[in-house]
Image (cartoon, rainbow, N blue to C red; front, side, top):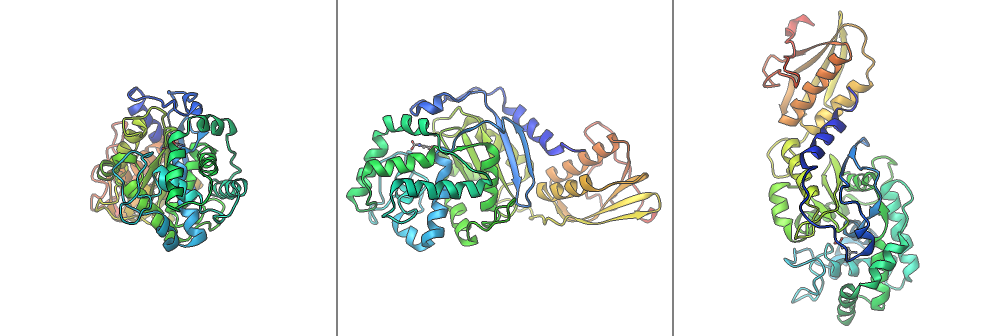
Length: 418
Ligand code: GLU
């Protein structure tokens, strides 16, 4: 039954594949080279599993998706309070490249708009650092987050610098209020290099999963950020991460997120997973048209919304696997939503089933959502396809219905039979 989650992700991509709304931005020459047809999505769980579909290996510049991670690094280096002196945490209600500051405090509204991001970039490695050293610290940190060496796209930097008047104006404004000390040109070069790190969706998904995991990179196991820094970063992403559409995003999708002009969108469900999607055509607010739809569909399907009242599943959704006579009984416990079912499918995939029936006992399942039940049923269907006889112990009707995608029913097994 391998491939169940990637198959689901492919379905998710198919739902939006024909949408051609939006434009690929060309104000940065490197962005105009993107293939508008690129479409991909990757999930990375905090337990270190990854699932991908579509153009998951396409490389692109990270752009604004870098902002939360540099913000996190600054807080890790200097402390949350010190960074708050420099940049606020309120949505600006303006375009990402607006030349604006908070009226009273004279600091950028938040670290997700360019004014805030340029100010935050300047904090890394100390305000007296030269540009090369600062950018190298950022590159190394991002590489640790991604779990591989990332590189800066020098030609993307050069191209963006040729038309960087707006960002230069922002840097001059920041300097005039003593928010940064570097020359405006140095500040913008430093920030633009940060934006020009080349990444894939796999990189972004595991980076998002590291925030969701409280700062421990799920694959390498290295602690890169404190839990407090991750919480602060995700909180600001939740209110300011999606340009001017952050409010609508929170209502419809309901998870912390950040998008960028290269068409990437990342989001994460704290404690559970990171998601990254890519599609280069952007809407009027600057967000990937299909990227937003992908997240909307996944949030509805998978029950990701943070304000939903569904319970959080643990990673220990399989209580036991026992051989009883000719049957192998797999006992499920707790909440079965996406992450619960993902853990169960992972255990089933690794288990070496012997001959005889595979019976899923869901009588200890406390709660489930549509996605969790759908995944369990599809998992059983695939086990049957592989030649196993299947069944379910479900005295309380926890699965709601036993109909599988192919129209057949999962046979009910009597509790006392095992
Ligand atoms: N480097 C881009 C800029 O400053 C990033 C913009 C974005 O992704 O929102 O214009």
